[in-house]
Amino acid sequence: MPEVLKAPLVVEFPFTRSLGPVQSAFLTGLRERVVLGVRTGDGRTLVPPVEYDPDTAEEIRDLVEVAPTGTVTTWAWNHAPRRGQPLTTPFAWALVRLDGADTALLHALDAPGPHAVHTGMRVRIRWAAERTGAITDIACFEPYDGDRTEPAGHTGQFADPVTGIVAAARLDYTYSPGRAQTAYINALSGRRTVGERCPACRKVYVPPRGACPTCGVATSEQVEVGPRGTVTTFCIVNIKAKNLDIEVPYVYAHIALDGADLALHGRIGGIPYDEVRMGLRVEPVWTDGARYPDHYRPTGEPDADYDTYKELL
Image (cartoon, rainbow, N blue to C red; front, side, top):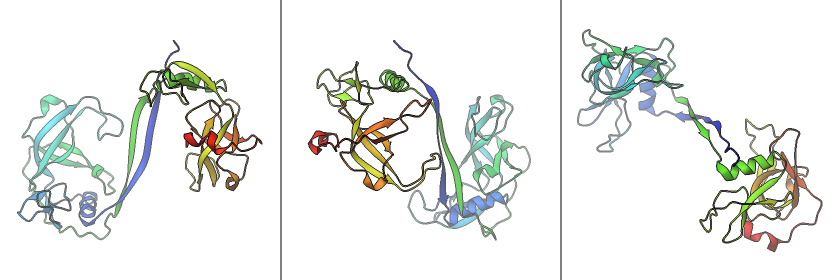
């Protein structure tokens, strides 16, 4: 049996959000080495601050400064830091209730080992050398055996408040397409397209899934399909993607390859975008060294009759 493919995969995108008055004051305060919480109607001080009371749902905006010192309420040791975490050496994730706060803030605690960490230990904020108005302005917490630091009573008003943040969302993982799609990908490298036929309903699925989505039974019989096919439906893309060197507008379509009972996706080229239509007969265009078709172009054949592909819409 051929070896099943696998490869590292990264999904990453920047997430941009605006800040309301409470979160704006909190992050701007961090930039200025000030920690702000918000006081609820019953007198509790929440850090990090929220805009609505978690118990009553009442809107809260009464900002209050708390101290940069506090107490560990619970913790867990991180023996193998990952990319993007606050510290590159082993550290503790800790919930720290800052002096003056009634809730705990989660952040890294720099300690020489788990033996040096315990619930109830006193800590203080270690500020980042460069601060921009983000939670990373707190570099970490560190053990502290000095006196309690009293806040200065900041009101939360700043001359140049932070109004928005950009956070990079990223997921690193190893992807394996499985046995069926490994065979599909390997066939594409030879400029062939193969699917698998269901032993019960006899439908041919491309790309193959290893099981029939209709009958729920395993599939293993390979069937070569195409290379020509029919456009079943399509959309016109008018927004350029950063990672694609394709000028807009262009057409992305569902294409039912001859012999297949499931339409796959492909870009349509070699024809003006406003002349692409349902039923258009197309064929793949390969580029040197490519593992899959670059796009599909018209074959010059008459359009397919609607009844021949209506079940594949």
